[in-house]
Length: 267
Image 1 (cartoon, rainbow, N blue to C red):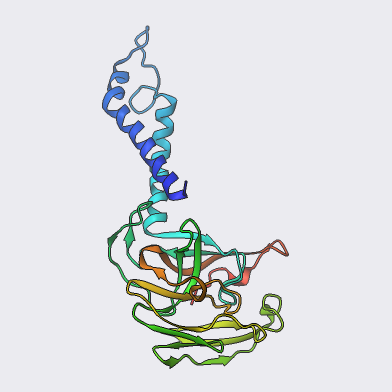
Image 2 (tube, helix red, strand yellow):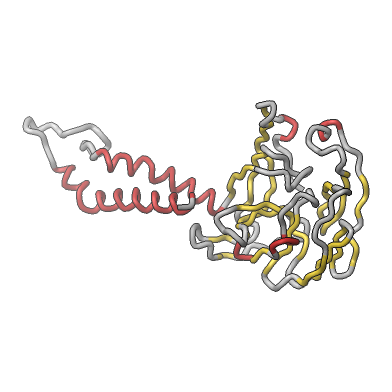
């Protein structure tokens, strides 16, 4: 069972327990008096609630708040692989804006409010089309109706070549980026971002038209990314949200926090 499904179930169970108690049992307890005429306990109504009711009252608002925040406002994710290097590192913990591309009901994932659409260059989290239980993160390259080509490590959008330029590696990247990889930059929409190229590796090339209601996505680590070049486009209904902020970064090799990455925005 997915985390949202668990949260919805817990909200339902604790809410129902609280509601049933309020409707049928709380008033009766309030009338109970001990043998010497003293009320059984000293809560706000003078009566002690059963343990299960106490737990329901305590946890219901907390679980509901977490569910609302994660479903409609923002959700944390951890970066498990290097497919988005150098933009995102293994061990980055990011926040995803859940209402950038529409407000959706948890579990059902049906959109109830339109708030926007992905733009070219956005970094998005989505449910992997081949296995929706798995979340992926990539950059939007092609919008619905676009013709996307990828040849000689270069993107072509509707016949227009997306130029790249080489970029100098900084000292903090030397331990992250493989020696033989080239660091470059390109501009997609309003996003100028860095990417990695492995000159020695040759992956699939070709051209496709992005279907309506779907998006073509790629990793910034172009030669080490499982993306739309291999399994196709992402349906709009699979979108989770837009990645926008790194709130924590952990170096698993040194076992420490990477302080320089904390608070960085994702471009």
